[in-house]
Amino acid sequence: MIKLTFIEPSGTSRQIDAALGTSIMQAATAAGVQGIAAECGGACMCATCHCLVVEAPAAGLPEMTETERDVLEFTSEEMQETSRLTCQIAVAEDLAGTVFKVVGR
Ligand code: FES
Image 1 (cartoon, protein in one colour):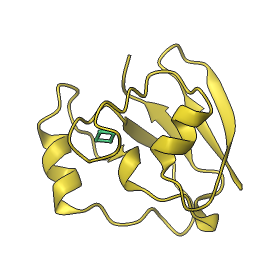
Image 2 (cartoon, helix red, strand yellow; image 1 turned 180 degrees about the vertical axis):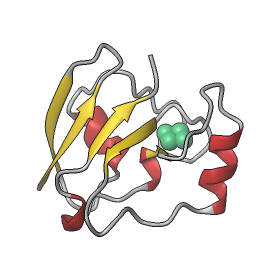
Image 3 (cartoon, rainbow, N blue to C red; image 1 turned 30 degrees about the vertical axis):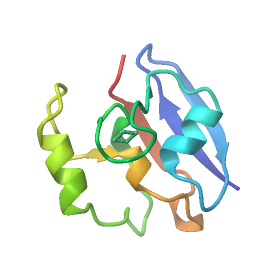
């Protein structure tokens, strides 16, 4: 388990426990983080798990795949430099302390 922080659309900051091996999206939805609809279930198709990385881990996040980038480029919420689809990032020890801002409503 690692700790992750999410800033919900309301501005509420929530720290959650995330199990290793799940995705960031799965950890967030399991913890009831608001604003992550995850409509495609993690298939990298809907972009409703879109978050901005507010504080990245020292080692950085895993590289974005071309598919993730393509989906982000066609979302209704404009892609930003720190945009990520949280279903495409696996929870790993070196992500402890990462802070995400939820883009959804
Ligand atoms: S849950 Fe649909 S793209 Fe992440």
